[in-house]
Length: 465
Ligand code: HEM
Image (cartoon, rainbow, N blue to C red; front, side, top):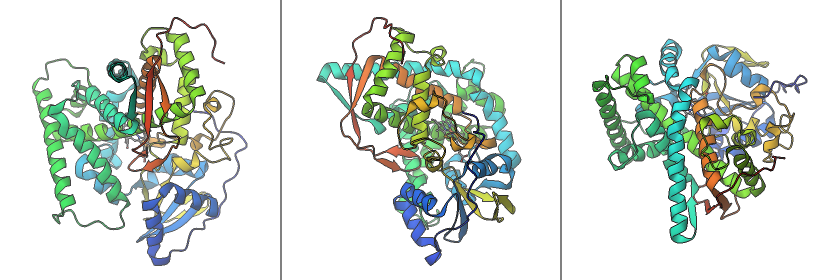
């Protein structure tokens, strides 16, 4: 990440916001229907700090990097994640790392961290590389069979990233026996989005069809995960190097804690990296020049050998493309809403105890004050000397609750794209890049891209320009 620029434009200390007619029902309606356009319009109309009423809550939308730093890092101890949202996720995540607060969170983070530490990444990378090669082979055989292959890319990447999460967690392949997990994970993301953006949801004990379906899915998923965890605990003498074995070791056999953290890693891990992969494929299909430049870099550095974790640091252009994709299309387009636990000054605005605070990577990362020609897809900005404030670019969040799977996520995305682009080229069937913000920012489900085989290369000597 680039260093803070020395002459950062000072934040505007206006704390205006839209009128709170009807307790902000209008705002809730707009958030539900077109959240990105609404957040953008609030930022353009009212500035860097926007005060808004949302139902019974007073809420602050914070857009300036200085203030983002205060909320996420320097004054992070004055905030917790908003309980209403966390209680929705708690239904299936329990009191996992994602949900916990205070000393309970610290304890969980310490226990989960070893399974995602930098030293573990190379061994997970071998599994990811294998899965990416399998996917490439499958696509190539479909092209051979039918002459072409068109993919509804978001569905394909959701399934692939779940397979990656499943394989690295349990060292098992996602097969039909565990289909309930696949269905549950996809379904719960949808439910989470609906419940967290609704002004009103019926209590869970009321047996509506939706509540009954949710209960059934959660029960099924938890029992599948429990079986896997118990089986592994029983075979504890068998040395396994997957994520689950390390979690079991550090959780000291506390089965419900293991189950909760497994579910949260499965969901948090696959949803975000799947969405990032979808955006990357779409951007590469649309920007053929960028795709060719990555392929040239791959051909130069790897020749005909398969991409591996060790190669990734020698692929600066590929890394720049991934970072630029995460700037324009951060899968966590809005961070989890926070609630102030005491009065706190954020850049001159008095955020009172109980107020909510919301931060949006999608908006701040597209601000022309920090990024030149901010809406343009320009990976070179991560290679050239362009610089921006540290907290203007934060696709993995920041501060103590920064994404624990950051190194894993970057490795997964880079290794997958490198493996596929070595053998395949992409082109877009439709020209639009519609986004459909759900629990994470995903492309519209109907966008299709077309794959074609690349000729096997001899070593290419051209330099990347
Ligand atoms: C491209 C991939 C990824 C992106 C963009 C991403 C993004 C994020 C962001 C923005 C947060 C912070 C949310 C907030 O502060 O409100 C977060 C937290 C988290 N992420 Fe990721 N993530 C990715 C991959 C992963 C992976 C692969 C895993 C697990 C294997 C993971 C597990 C988690 C967990 C458990 C947290 C909560 C950490 C805590 O509260 O201490 N993420 N992620």
